[in-house]
Length: 88
Image (cartoon, rainbow, N blue to C red):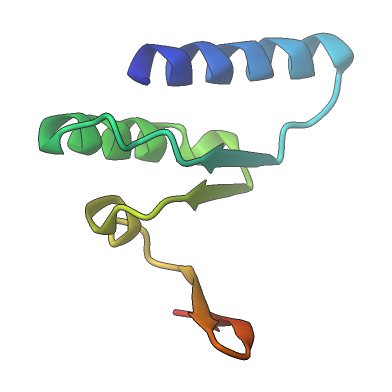
């Protein structure tokens, strides 16, 4: 996943630069399940290293270790009546 992540970031930047378009938001949807603790730490470092390249980075994950690495979170809570959002 880490190589895939690096390639996707590089391609996104290249295509945005070619098009002369800004790249304000990065969405990373899951894909972390195959990582061990060391891999998750490296991914957190990688995400933090590109933080200044984007206005917003949205990480979708169920992994607590990764989820807790970010200061602002939108938690989706499922109930019998439906889902609710909690921003923390």
